[in-house]
Image (cartoon, rainbow, N blue to C red; front, side, top):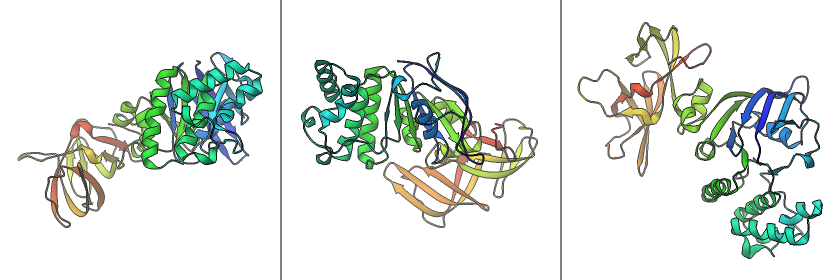
Length: 352
């Protein structure tokens, strides 16, 4: 168990290619931290530098209070789980899980004890004699996790571990990982491009873009109080609606409607942000109302999504599935003003 600190860490692969740019991030002991962002944002590189698989160009990485920049990977006491499983095909499940311990020279009784305990935790008890080719994708991923567990590291590093699993297995394994974290009480640092994984698993989420940390906060805060348009658009599904507006005092005017803002934001041009789930049924006398021309609708059991135009702007709204709507209808939607976001059109930073 350990804390991890990145202090102004930069990784350059060449003079023109900066993978991680001045990353400062403090990860608490026993925390489940998720690094999330699209491919190429630097999240995996940040993890690999911590593991010792990539050199640090500038800055310091600490495990507890010890700088590990120059420390050999084997001495860092971290375990990494990869997207590709990285299992030895000619070895049994038992031998794959035991490999690291055997290389350390651990006593045979300790090896057997740890492997059997990890097998019990991950429900692999009856599969210890099988080869990887005899396992499903989900079982192979659990073996890779088991190989990390038996080492009893101070920090678990997980790099897109669910990407190769189908949708149902991803949900199941996501739950297993959370239970495993609770049971082991160890620091987990988890990398993913999937915002659903980030929101459901992390104690805190660090959102990255182009090698730069955008925001780090608990999932609810990231969702409710995004610091900029990038975070607001990346977190949430379907993504937040962004509508250009001109602002005069307390009024925001879009191409198809006008709203009274709760306060003057101090900018002349802005981008309104409204999540699809933050529209309300309208009642007589409502001021915060927009008219949506429906172009496409999707009914997904408990939800109904309307896709269409408000003035010249595209908009998505989640509405009651019992609402009777057809393509080309005009639907009046109330805006939940307490959940409204406003961003500066130039800086894209949140101003409301």
